[in-house]
Length: 189
Image (tube, rainbow, N blue to C red; front, side, top):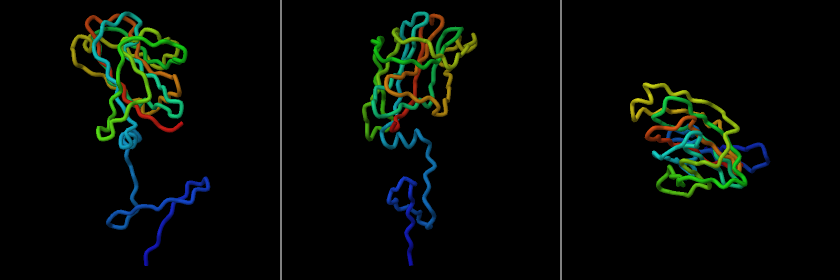
């Protein structure tokens, strides 16, 4: 005789049937949050490539434009040819006219290929640098060798509401350029 297992979420939901494996074991998903978001077409990458960045400009800025969803910043990868500091910031962008080179978010699930409810710019000049969350000091060995990428895993800890943004500002002016990619995903607010 078979018995069904129903799981309730504690809010009065009538429950959902639990799945089992071929060996009749409870099927549990252990995928990361960004993997689960990618399966739904809600995970994106924003990539900024070399540009003529001036001192204190924002190399890349990603701003959440969704009224109903949070944008979770998972990680970023970057490189630059400067010896000096980069400031990682959070910014409030409501009422600002963001400028720079527009970046289209790439959906990480090519089967769904959704459009991100966000705006993003490379060489962005209008956002403030008031909420610096981290400063990265880059040394000469890293700046002198092109292609050395730095990765920062934020462990899904940066949560952006409507018109909130994440960006990377340069303190000094890069000689030739930079590259930066921001990975993030959307969840219901």
